[in-house]
Picture 1: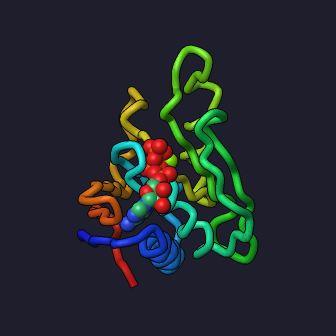
Picture 2: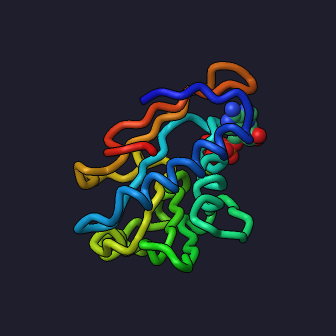
Amino acid sequence: MEILTTSAQETQKLGEKIGHSLIKNGKGKQATILTLSGELGSGKTTFVQGLARGLGIKKRILSPTFILSREYLLKNSIFKKLIHIDLYRLGEQNKVESLGLEEIFANPENLVVIEWPERLGLGLPKQVIRIEFKQMSETERLVSIKNLIRVT
Ligand SMILES: Nc1ncnc2c1ncn2[C@@H]1O[C@H](COP(=O)(O)OP(=O)(O)OP(=O)(O)O)[C@@H](O)[C@H]1O
Ligand SMILES: [Mg+2]
């Protein structure tokens, strides 16, 4: 599925809609994982802001660039936590082991979004929902979504 958005607000709306679809699709046997790929400023965090709003999160979503991961507790949802991971600064100081990804991925009540998933050496589970952002112009982003069962 490909969608062209023409503003940050539209990308947020898309995130919100995908959030609703994920809830309707239900939990899996493990965490529901979305990978967000695309160059700097292509709209990944903007998308997560909308996704969070769609899940009922009122807090402002800040990019976890330096701390790599932020968790948000969800109320009245099939998912208990939104875990926002940004691996851009993964390296010597920020080790992947410290994130406890295996445990995070194993829990079906986690909804996990990962910016810069390419920084992870290891393979991700194959049912991961892959979202790619392409900057077409200053305000246009082409968003392609793979592996999402159902968009409602
Ligand atoms: N259609 C659009 N969709 C998303 N963002 C847009 C769009 N048009 C303009 N923008 C702007 O582009 C920027 C996107 O920044 P954002 O932090 O979401 O990117 P990112 O992919 O998370 O980058 P990084 O890799 O640095 O984390 C914002 O300043 C946003 O306002
Ligand atoms: Mg970002």
